[in-house]
Amino acid sequence: MPGSELNAIINKIASAGVVGAGGGGFPTAFKLKTGTPIQTVIINGAECEPLLKVDQELMARYPAELLATLATLVQATGAQTGVIALKEKYREAHTALAGEIRNYPGLKLHLLPDVYPVGDEHLLTYSVTGRTIPPGGLPLQAGAVVLNVETLYNIHQALEGHPVTHKYVTVTGAVRQPITARVPVAPRCGNSWPWPAARL
Image (cartoon, rainbow, N blue to C red; front, side, top):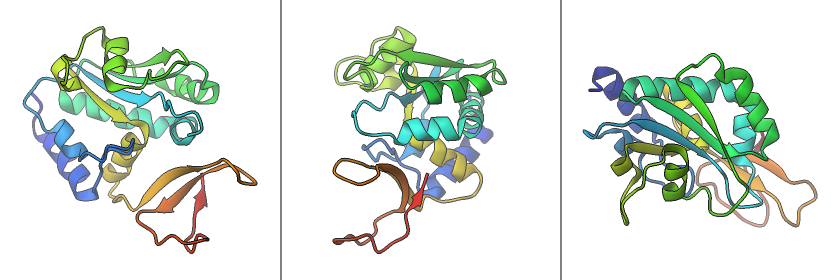
């Protein structure tokens, strides 16, 4: 069973304020702090909302950091494997990850079709593991933990000693130049952005 290594990771994640970055906001430390055996750590890179690009950008730009962090989680939780699931059409992200994953024999890439809602936890867990989550249940009941790509990146930052102070967002639609930006958490918003936004 996982022991001191996982507890140390959980403490760092909790101290850094890492929560689910995919929209749920559930404290990530609680997902990992369980007595139930974890067989598979799944990273959800499906990003089903058609205009969002955050996870795609992170996978393309930080493949080494994401894979190293996933490998750390797999080892600490005692899982059998770690899987990054992303849509097959995300070519740049897939190429970047494929170039690094050969260094991690316990990790896999799982390519998904371009259909909605393939990123749903129930569908994703079944697609990756072949195991079904009970109605109203959680991935853990199928031996899996599912984390968002940005959440995994925030875990990487937490393990490096950096708290969550920023959020990655897609700025698109009726704008001159769509971008993915890193912005401060809980800024004061008005007609313009009075805070610095770093382009990813």
